[in-house]
Image (cartoon, rainbow, N blue to C red; front, side, top):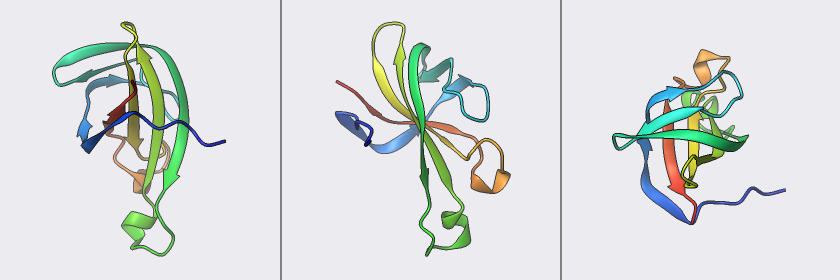
Length: 102
């Protein structure tokens, strides 16, 4: 089944700070966005998005693992990690926010 998409997509994904998560397939327990800390209470994922096979090798091997998370105040976010958490060539394991749910 198709996963729901956020009501608001950011123009460009924004980096997250102070992310605490278990690799390879766990959502973050906490993160900071725009200087504000968030404690995750519920999460779904990962939904894996991979690069297209016809692209350059760097793009073709790229992986994004998306998570829908809810924080302790009930706000819901669409986050992703670059990389699969196992192979270094899939991404640098940095975390981003890509959107918010209504």
